Image 1 (cartoon, rainbow, N blue to C red):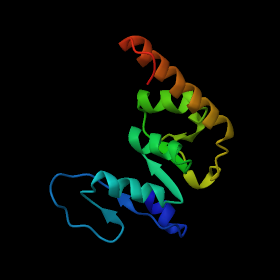
Image 2 (image 1 turned 60 degrees about the horizontal axis):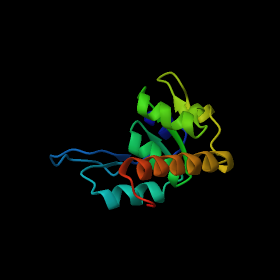
Image 3 (image 1 turned 90 degrees about the vertical axis):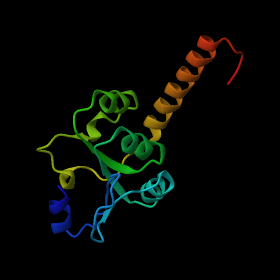
Image 4 (image 1 turned 180 degrees about the horizontal axis):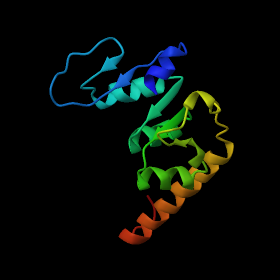
Length: 130
């Protein structure tokens, strides 16, 4: 996928996490601290990820994104907010997918899920409000 994107003139920055220092070129970034990771996501035009946190933060930041892989956790999140179509299998081509996401409905669904979670926590720990 990355080579395909680069061949089509799209700038790609790869974010990796390794405990050991790894030599990298300009397009591969290693050993990010959380604020650096968030900064890269915040200032990205589009995000391609295979992680739950990359997916969740893409939604929160209302970014154009695609998620690869077959994680049940990611699939459940994407289904919950109505964005399951943003999961791309290994044969998918992100260049043929719609870049823009209308977050109107997804934001409402996410807000409802957050409220349901808060209510569950409040009821579970027996307090009046979070």
